[in-house]
Image (cartoon, rainbow, N blue to C red; front, side):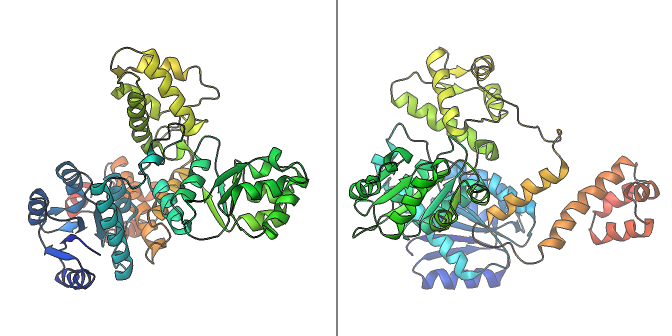
Length: 456
């Protein structure tokens, strides 16, 4: 590793361990127990990566992230925290931390993540290595900061230079083909052909031979594998078993649930198991709503480079765009924004313009607001999935069950106490527990003393 790392942690042992490990890896290290000192270093332009604890004697590390992003755009910040809660992880993601690790962390894992952060910083300072890939106007962008997309990126990076077949699933318009293209373009096969085929290319008996002659050991993408008939699927199986002298990498896309299609007989079992060396699911746009403003900015900037008028989403317009479910996903968002750019005059896109465009979209249903008719279990499931996604290919720290119960119990009891005016007898009755049990939980959950006195 090559670069300067700023370490902020109030634990001297952690500072010492990180300083020694990073120095041995070839980095320069500045370590401090003060957020004030850390922010001074950042302001002075020091450091290529920041590793910061959350709870510090002079402040909260998460609250410093917006200031760091403002003073030093693109400076990666890795958050480490002993507060191993869902909310800590979510807050780190919402504050756009580069990465988040709960304590106790695995030192080799932290070193790998630091190395990746340094490499990202280096690439950002030298510019993109493959600018031609960013200039293809017809592609859906690989843009997204949400945990779901970050987890997808980590999976793509892991399989990029393997020879494993890849099955990419997701709804129409999510960017499945772009994921396949990205895996090829940044892999060791990048100089070889990338060929996309459909069922029509394989209908004839000589079809597989012609396809293999075109791909020449590069990457072969089979589009919508679940839509192919039995005979074509059998040909693909034989092609994968005997690909000839120049073995290509096989990939396939599917809009449906490939496992279900296999179980129901629409997809051959032998083909499914050959293709599913790695399964990559591309999330629908409604599953990563926080990426919508980023995607909108990307598209609007690209349209402007192509000669369209400069336009941006107003606050109310952006809120409305975020409030729709986008059944056509990213491709539909792109098309809607293109119409908005070409049909309006003012630089700021208004809410009424968005309403006019979205009103013509098929099958549009507004996304449920927080606290709408969505079941509590579904809401909890979304937060739990997001927590797991934040850890990528790593599992959360042990003791998850107890942490989840605590996170649910604490707000439940506080809200119930407020609703009953602090009357513990009524609160216990409302919750369906014994009053002594309620008192014990108030103590165990460490509800603030001042709050307890107020509610007694």
